[in-house]
Image (cartoon, rainbow, N blue to C red; front, side, top):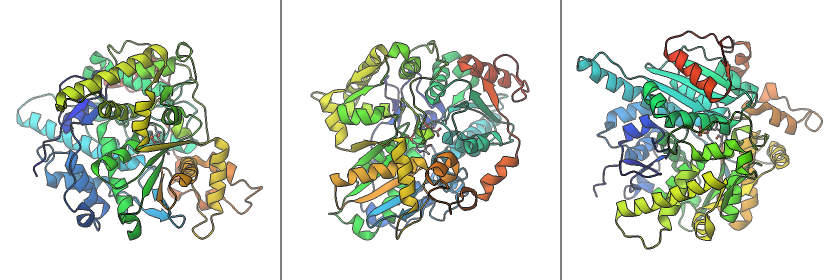
Length: 554
Ligand SMILES: Cc1ncc(COP(=O)(O)O)c(C=O)c1O
Ligand SMILES: N[C@@H](CCOP(=O)(O)O)C(=O)O
């Protein structure tokens, strides 16, 4: 059956739909919403047999082409983009599945260039940007036009997205990239991975006295500032960009095909546990389920920053703090809601610093995408008319967003909580439990020893706690980073007193990362949104700014 051509629209309303190309290049919708597909495509008949022996790249092509019409990227070119995206992965399987128990598995997503799961999507997004810009600029040249399209990528990171984006975009023509991160709140290796990249088009921006939410909020404010956005043609690398979610859907299918045959039999149940921060990775899993991948539940595994866990348990989405006292929280909620004029906080909010710092996030961007679908699934008396029902769901979502803006919290109610519970379970994992989990996997009989990073440990702890809900299931925990990236937590868990034989440098740290220590770092330290704007404006004017020596707030 012919499928309707896929287009994308904003969660926050407006009847406009965009092509895949425009949705990817725009990143965040002008009304502050996130782009989502107009419909969930159908998998081909007999996909389970047809796809079972495909290599990762081939599987990726099959899934991505359901969302990217060949009028936007012709098949041959999409295959080429995918091939380039995964050529630098260190594992033949790209995202290999490792057995850790009789029915327990870990999906290792960190075999890409920066040793984090973000590489899977950001290598692809880098290639997409290159392809679209090259095609547009060739056309301009053909048409005898002088101007060329340039993209100013502005992204926020709690450590991993930044380096993966930089490795995906470094030295790509027509692109300048600014990565914002909270000064002093990412691991030394993460900072070294970003700041030692010498390419001229890369700017690492340490935002003083901030946290990830502040950085994310600055990014969203800049995107919603119409003038700034159109002057600099902003591009998004965070998971607000639909292409990030899309690329991540693939590895849920890949995991499925790597599980033992028995797991794929009708009576078996498969559960996925996902260490969660910005809700991008787990949302990709939810789309995989919507597409028809047989999975039972997705476990939202949070650290002590547990707003999401509290929502899934209570239906209430709220910060622990009073909004007036917590500007970062409020500003993140209202991002881009209107004129981009809201003040951006410069001081840290109530986010806790934990042993899994990449998940130290209060407000998860992608939760809005799920909320849209929950709104749609629970509208009273749906009309059956796609556009009308879409508008109703968008209105409902906007209502929630305004309430959040006003009160810093919203009670989404039992109906929404129950609708979410069909697909999600959730668990909060403390720092202490995270360290215990790292120890446990190091001492793992039969399938160990296995050194896991603290984020993966959060996922594993959540798996164990959820197991009683569905005994006899197959469990896949997503491993989101290589342990080398988080030495402090790993060394704290596998400390010399308890584990005298363990040597982090010898057994965990890859040679490639050891070499970073010797390289020169280039970091621009700035204060708040004003500092970020100033840096971008001066760079775009062609000023050469020596890292750490800029004037003003830079
Ligand atoms: C290592 C690691 N694990 C887990 C996460 C959480 O993923 P998501 O933000 O997609 O929920 C992140 C970053 O967000 C991360 O860097
Ligand atoms: N943990 C992330 C935070 C940014 O999330 P993103 O998936 O929206 O880019 C990081 O490592 O930076």
